[in-house]
Image (cartoon, rainbow, N blue to C red; front, side):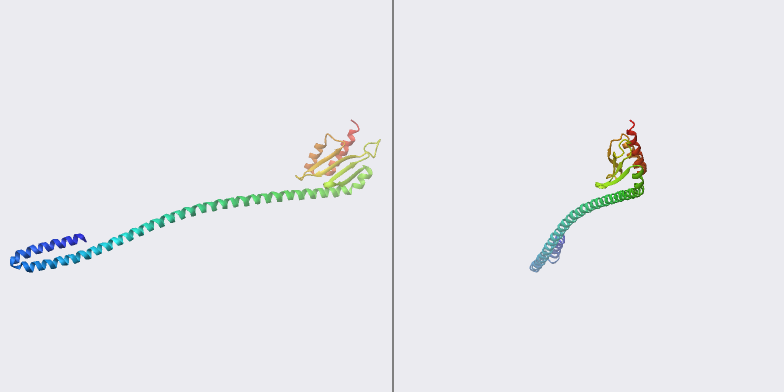
Length: 226
């Protein structure tokens, strides 16, 4: 805008020079009036261009303010995106922990179910063995002097008599139970037998209580000949 004003002033000066040459000194008064008119016109134009330049400066300031505001918004968005990324990462970790916990719970459930199945199976085996032994209880007691009792903590006590011919009523006692691992366990043996651990292991392998009872009686009988 300033270049256009300067160009206009230069053109007006050239016009003045040409006009002065063409019309001579006799036209000085008219030329002076024309010059004043041109000067006034230039001043009006200069004032308009100055106002326009001020408006452009205001516009530039507004654009700069807008750019600054956009920069602040960009920083704000970047911070929120970073926070969102952290939240997503935490959620992913929590989901993984939840999955691991769920898997662990499922494994524990499966392990518990297996133990319950084993316990149920062994309990059923014990029940059948007890039924089988109970059927022969009267026969054993009559001919072999064997008596069975269920005592505290669901232990099964075997009382052997007719072993010592000199003292047929002398009791030889062996007590059997099922431990927390659902295995057979000899909790007491009177008098003690060196081979009772071997009998216990065999019983755990076969679940054959009748064979265990027979082996224990033989071992008690063998004590008399040592």
